[in-house]
Image (cartoon, rainbow, N blue to C red; front, side, top):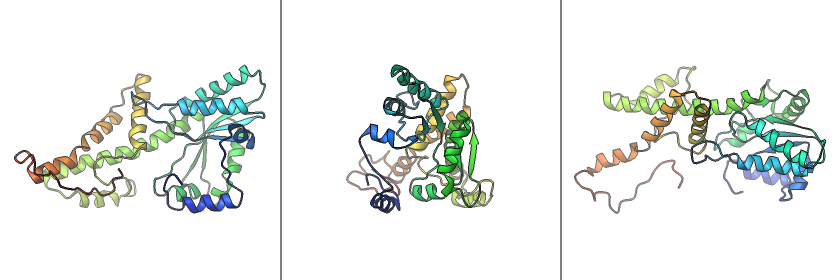
Length: 288
């Protein structure tokens, strides 16, 4: 496996050995294989922080190029509001060039997986968001997710744009919690309070919870930074000033210098610039 996730290697090996999981570099075979076509590619930040959709649209073009039957095209990638319309336009353009009368539906089906718990989150999801106005597509998606929807009703059906925004809203909410706790940690440091005690005190409130309230060097990772920036760029594009999201981004950016400020203070680098020369620092939880 090119990535590490607990349980992923065993899951892939088992299903591949039993013939339920097939890999191919033949796009035509992949498109012809199933009625449901998932787009699950990266949406890295562009130079201005907006989501780069070139890979999403390229897959849409590939599907349209090779489809010989009607398809349901599912956006699994994290994409800005309005991407389903762009995917639909891309597919229809190619079909028109082929003079094809085939039909398709574009569905938004965002993922909510945590790094380190992705397999568990996939098999036992908290919720399954399906964004579509098509009854046929909805029923196919319900059939697809039936094995993961047995204990209770987890499927939430909504319009496509709401589903697209739900993914960004969730990540931005979690990023906001982390930036808020970093602000509290900075305040606690100045007033002489213990932020760990504060964290336990507010985490016990079920309305807040213990997840995503650990202070640190920022919210890190790849998803939160790019998703907050992408939603900020979206609000800029529609002429809305998102003060909260921009503040979250500013706090996170400022927090990146926090660790070095501690090191500088501890070793008195303002007085002894070479005090850390030759030293090795171990950073808990950092992947380089």
